[in-house]
Length: 105
Length: 416
Image (cartoon, each protein chain N blue to C red):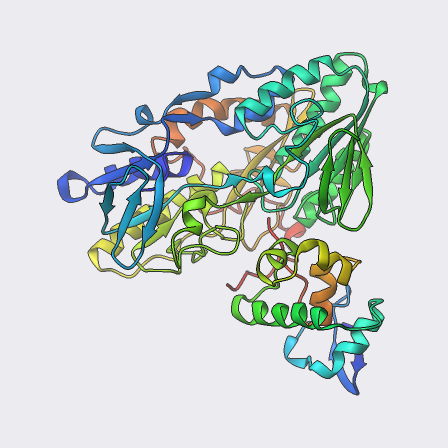
């Protein structure tokens, strides 16, 4: 599995670029991962979503889907796409250092 | 028992047998007395099923000794073990079963029910819409037909794919396939949620000339302009759209403090099927948040575990973590053929035969599977709903007859 370094620390990612071990993540890594995902400037709204992702992962063991994000994060789906144009659930999960949201079957 | 659909009916009947005598009083609550054979809905738009043949009275599907109470649920009070009904009465319980399934929420997608609804924009997930779609399909003489899934989870996640395969067959029968452009639009990153199936089903879409648009999260349906518009700005034009609306749990779940999640589904232990909210609440069928398909076969396989665990709970015994996520679906592929898939929480759908070496072919088109799908209609009313086991088909997923080389990389078990 590929490793890379964010904010001076070594982390392990899977083939799609998601953290395999969310414990390796720190807040200091956020701006760098966000830049890689094409997000230059992080606003409070971005942070609100990132914190929500971490919280959901820690309480439920999986990241939320975009629909759950829109219902529960306090940021509407339309605004989420404004903040993370390439797909809020996936991109925010990457930046928050959690595995790809499992979605539904 | 809240809900007299597939899950509630089969569980009530099973429990009536297993909790013999007057030791348990079983009451099934539902808002209406119309039991709809949902697997039949797919066939209505193609004139392959008569709408009126799909509905029977709920009450008639219940064994004697099961009481049917026709009332809508206002909310559940978990603190006092009481169900408040919309008619102002209430029911106390020792054990509550939530079996009220999923609710369609077309109103949650902008424009879906706006101009063009039931003219150019349809669904086949209700009897009325499927019936209206049958007329529109019969009149459709060419153009762009878009099949779109708004977002997961949905009931029977293979159904919209089957709609595409049958539409290809239908327009070929009518001799106008060359004038119809079929597009399958999904929020997923492939045709289906499971990697092995995804390969097979994407290939089948290609073979049938159905284009695939992935990672498309529909934000708006423009019925008059004939466009699906994604949140990211992409558009899919259509002359006829067949959409699967958003799903959630029933509204009373949202009104019952502590019972449901953000979408109204009920957080449930995936193996014991006990609700996380309280030990005397169990969940069966589409109402649960367990990570498997929302499908009748799942409710059937869950039945044995839930019935056993209710008996154990009442006897003060430890619960059995017996449910493995077993799911079994026939996928109609048109031209009198179908595929069969069989999987659980840990094992992806694989090739081989089901339920053993001499059984139906898995993950491959075959006439036998189509016959199996047709036979299922009879099994549903006469074996599934009465809460009986299907001969030779175990509740836990069988491995005999399966080519496990395909399953060398099983998905990790969900750990919630």
